[in-house]
Length: 431
Image (cartoon, rainbow, N blue to C red):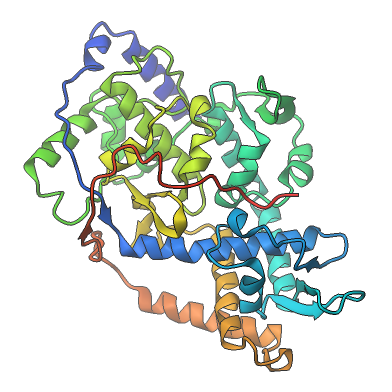
């Protein structure tokens, strides 16, 4: 909290400096970069699409008063779940999670309920939510602290609940437990919204600032507090870009611009200045840092664009800064990932909920092996989960150290400047 106050004070001193207006315009040379495909991150996004759909279906079945869903009830959910196959076919792929049985009255109507393994994994998920509830509250508070009005539409938060690690029905099971933190309000547009009731100064420290508080970067952080340097964004360029003189010169000038915290008021900054662009990069960097998978869909960000005070065509920022972000066009949608959050296609510091989702995905993949072979051949949940744990331990032992560069980024595509036409609006399956 002390460091956060020092940071706020240093920013206010900077903004009042007579040279501040000049610093907003540094005349940075614009470099046009081509989009480069990252196959390892594309694979992560492809995998997580099926994993997310399975988890959302699990939650929908659990919410159902009957404890099951009929094929008729989810017939039109394919687009909502982001699937490329019908939902019925998707559920039948994974008999280790979803058990099919005929309807009591209509024999030809397929129904699905959760298997014992799925219920066991769900109970473990609830335990993680309870154990890390304070972390969830901080993450949600920081998201609202970045909003102009400290308010976000509930529909936008529902779309982001998977990315932010919020529990299902969080507005009923989580928010009412913290009446001093949050309140439900009607937004000016008439939609239901969640508002942060009070500012938390101890939370107003960005991930970039925290990463520079460590022992290795202590001197740089102390210099930053004295106004002698700026905080630099970690860069991991696609192969070949880092060696280009123009790109290096451009990034050096960009890094020299003052870092504006995403929790600072930005209304005084010229919206067309280079400083405002760097501030927008900082906001997007912080938002993605708050997601437990270090990625989200562009449309989810778009729904909060005005509250976050980022440009209308903010997709350009992802393509202009490929050393910080990766823009993926997999699964008929547009996803943006924070590159520093991944190393060789794996999350650097996975959240406990992410680790559980990896278990969930292993059970899904095992289900493919037993598809169509009969429920009596599917291993019991204790054997299945034990085998899953052994395989995950083997993978961790095989991990080792990797180079920073992703050696599978080697395919160039045409430059995508605006990106506003690449995907259709998608949303999660809600109540």
